[in-house]
Length: 475
Image 1 (cartoon, rainbow, N blue to C red):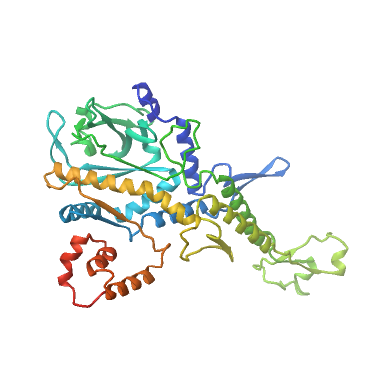
Image 2 (image 1 turned 180 degrees about the vertical axis):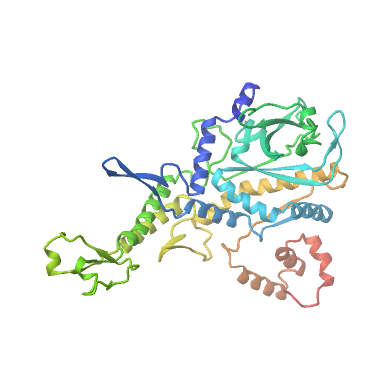
């Protein structure tokens, strides 16, 4: 289904379709399966071509995995000053597997540039005016860039957007377009449109009466009023200027390796050549025909041994002088390793990880794990990306609180939210914790301050739990 054509025909403006083609290119590098690069043909003469598969180091995916683990891992703590709100949000995130999917979508964000988190009320019931009456809890939809279509934006901030969700029911595929738009009073409403996706009826729009007969859409409302001037979606992207589009106002993000495709190509060329060294340079022993059998005609050598190669009888007179000849081609391992390591440094530097992040050793990629300096390229890169991620997580939490109140949870919406990112790669946490324990024993730091810092609690929460602790014991 051509979503961009549909939006344009309905007088919606969105990002140019050429940008979505670029997203597809980034995805192919993430999968290490780039058309006309990883699969190619070699001409051997006389009209003969050989189909080849180029080996890949998979560095695009490795980059995405690493930035995801640095930004959002199991050590990141989300803390709210209100205990009831904190417990409610923690329960919603846990039920939606955010601990796993949050990291997974950071990796996806790194290859496609942009992801979205779209909280909604499960099994929602609305009245005739589209106001929410009831529901069965809060769920979260996760969306990648290829299914995100900005409708309005200003200064890089998307204010209205359409998301595409697909599903299959009884062997038929359907698409649901979820549009988040603003009323004249700036409050948001959500509009749903359902389409058939297929060869014969691709893009055929269904009426509300028609889609209510289809399992996944049986309770779907055509329009929902949120009653809020804040959006019910969160856009999360890398903090990198989008230079992949001629339109400088494009609000979508770019892949972490968007400007390093040349290095990825060169690395895969070098790695493929390195692998071929061991195929093309393996030892062979060329044997004259008369040396293969004894006087009784029995085989002298193992016929399944691939190292021996029978030469034709009329090969040359050299066979008479040297009936068994060894070929032991020299491998260019050091040259390949140096070239690969040089380009790994270039790639790492261009992606903000600094040099010496990756090393090619004995045919494998190893990753540096040492604590990094606060003045390093990697430190500045992580902190730069955390600026957007911090805002995105806080927006997600506030939407969850707002939807919880729609369901009658009675939560304070002005609660303070703190995101404690994992800085263990930057700081020696064990040494810092030991130092803090010493400060507590000296009276410089209170026990409540210590507990709040190391247990991800507010100062108020820590003070309440202190009486439960054994006197004089710090874990």
